[in-house]
Length: 380
Image (tube, rainbow, N blue to C red):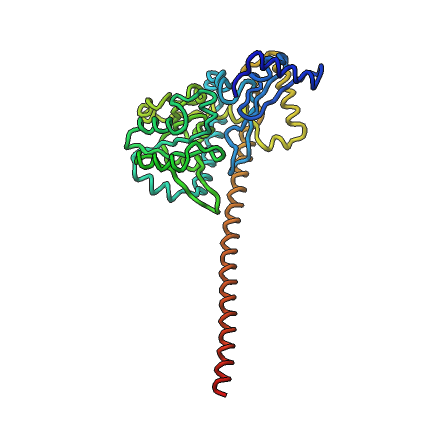
């Protein structure tokens, strides 16, 4: 996760040359948190280095989206380097309307298919205002030294101790790398009456997905989660709890600005969302197009060799209407399959009950037959 020193870079280059000889790559792609620039950029100075990572949609009910950033995906990203250009990106009235329609359809689908409606409704009455705290794995705010408040439970404790008691806090965790243990959760629930961690079991699948909370919150307290970017769909303000990650879309910095952010009027960021969807990220459907990835990387390499990395490096990739329809269709298909699965499970349970009832009836019949024989023999 960290930059290599000169000795480590020299050793890495030596290993590479022993394996590949004089061959030099045109493009180097690293996956995940790893920065291609920090690892390989100093060895192959002419190569275009890209870091591949999940973007706004990475889990069900969405199909996956990816970003190829020429810097990183956590710190020093293109989104941070060009935050002013992104913030000032102009969209037409027509494009703005398309974004609004897309957002509305997304919100309606999520609301109508939420598995935690009842739990949220019951809890909503307890506090006047609510915020969402989506926790990420330790690497995001420890290894990158992005956190303003330390790591793990210490950070959560500091945040909770600085939030007014009349503001409820919905806490969610990363599904693969949870930050808090069950013991941690119990401690916080006991110590802070406004610490709310919901558990809901639907179809034997653990559900604690941040996207179902947005209708019921007033702001997001974001670390380095894509949940912060998801707030653009709901026009919810974002309070950044890390140093730089959220700078291109945040409304406030640090838990100390919570009251100020909650009092601010809602700010629409449709131009930011439009640019992000159409210029920065790639959708799963794109990779099924013939030669798409080759053409995409070829285009980036040509731009890099001609002008280096500039804001124009990110040209328009997808049409907003196309990706809107694609995303909505994917969501509808997912939820329809869930409903079918639920219906099948209900029918299977009914079948099981009928079969058990049949077995009981058959046993009763056998007992009656035996009883009849016994009675017959006795009276004969």
